[in-house]
Length: 455
Image (cartoon, rainbow, N blue to C red):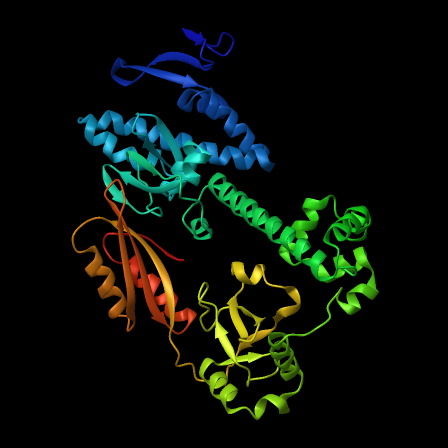
């Protein structure tokens, strides 16, 4: 007798010829006759059959089939393991990691389940839940324990995000996140805030420019002339509107002098508007500018020489210039810097990005750089902000981290925050950017320290 499942396949697609024969000692032997394709369907199912066909065809489909074939092989092994395993809990623990090779599953305090890429931080989770939650993420609790923003989450973690309306994204957050959503949101926020600041700075530059380069001394007439020439200015610099003009000025893409030239003409710019008398401070400024152009005049001043050697700064091409460092940004050796000629006080040194540098009059900004030949021995106060757990011994850990690195602490201000956290503001005396990086790295290694930033 022959069962012909080739002519009449089973509902699941099974095809084969079955028959029974009599073997030695009158034993019955079942014989199944089928092709290789039929055998694949019988052993692994209809899906495996199509994968086999795609793999043999080659190309992109063949590569995909190879990946899917690997998964089917793993699934068959998993089924066999189920049959061998008597304890279901042991089985779940054994295969849990295999099930989630590329992602982790975590919970919100409300019990909602979220899937994120393996290696994600609590910041990634905050942005996954909602962008506003990510923007104002001040800390997090994982399974009831305070953790830092860069803490990497694991399968089964229950994550509670701590919000603060005063918290905003920082550039170093980009180093803590892995998901593209979090990175894009942080970059967009930083770009938007920088643009807003540039608009404010650019608008102020226009207001100052209208007063400084005004040829008639009439502010109302100057503003009227600016409004009349605005379309011409926008066309000249290929800008869409006045807001884009403010932004370009704030970013330093165009100079206020060039804008005022288009408004009042080159003649007014040459005379610098209605400038007449020069007071004593302006004479001091002219001396500084002249000293940048003529080294012989500045090299004869022993006071300037001593100050220059002490600070290790070259202004233009000169080393013998009276200097002062901005207390707001407190630049360190190794950082990118620029100088601003201050009235009667020499040249003030700023870090690039300092708000006072962005607001400074463009014609007073001079190029400065660190003197590689000088030996830097001067210490400058650097303000650090440390977010920490409000637990005993945290302040001692901070102090130990700084002193063992070879640096001294100036002032310390502590403030207790909500949710069991504290905020410490430290003044540390440092010489270089390398010193700063070492101190921050050392602090972040201490227990109880959640985040360290430079103010």
